[in-house]
Length: 309
Image 1 (cartoon, rainbow, N blue to C red):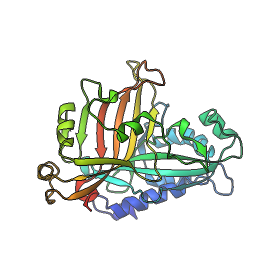
Image 2 (image 1 turned 120 degrees about the vertical axis):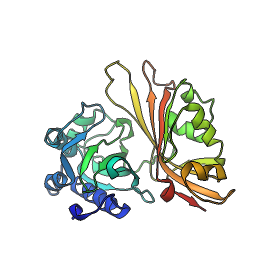
Image 3 (image 1 turned 180 degrees about the vertical axis):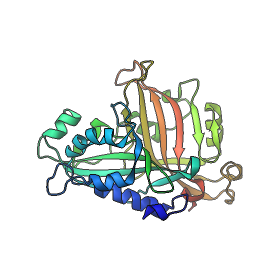
Image 4 (image 1 turned 45 degrees about the vertical axis):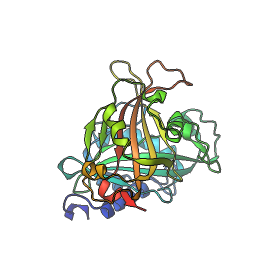
């Protein structure tokens, strides 16, 4: 049905695509409900690039499928849902492609395949388990995925009854006490990109944020910030990809109308929902120390995701 859609994809069409993908990848290692590879193949381009945490990049769907079969079988009886209150956030990118980020809560039964795939996460076979992860997709106007990179951390696998509330990650602490002097912002240069506003440097980031009056940042309920290491790059750098599902509440300032191409009243109390994407350089860093943020890119559409309260 997607082939008849005109560019760019609507929010509803993206929601339908995501629902189809989650349904097709549910079940996992449960023989009664196997992974629906036929449907997944219909949703993905044959030349889809896939980047999985800790693995080399796959340039073709068939190459990824061989490895992904083992990956999906490690989630026995998986039930995949978007956490209540969360939505796929869509930004329109190059060639009217939809750049999509959406969180997923996966509930499943830990099995021997899980231990093989993810190592010892402190869970034993048949334990009812869960993990929150983020899907990152690029979807064409035909509803075909050309790039896919899920983000999850091995340390985030938990027993089903445990909550994410007391998240002790350094990223969570940063959002609870956001200051320019925070050790995470110690890098001399940070590559910053805001939707609509565009690219800027570290000074530009803090200059823009000064217009967010009395700003409070809260993590979206049911979601969890994620920080995940990919393989070291060719220079041996260890860089973590991070996503923070954040709700900014602040007083609007007219200077932001020009920046975001909006026309909201000065002093209005607003809410901005974003999946903030960061890269943190942790080369040579021991576990307890902070890395340095080297890129910061909030993911939202100002016209859709900034609302007057």
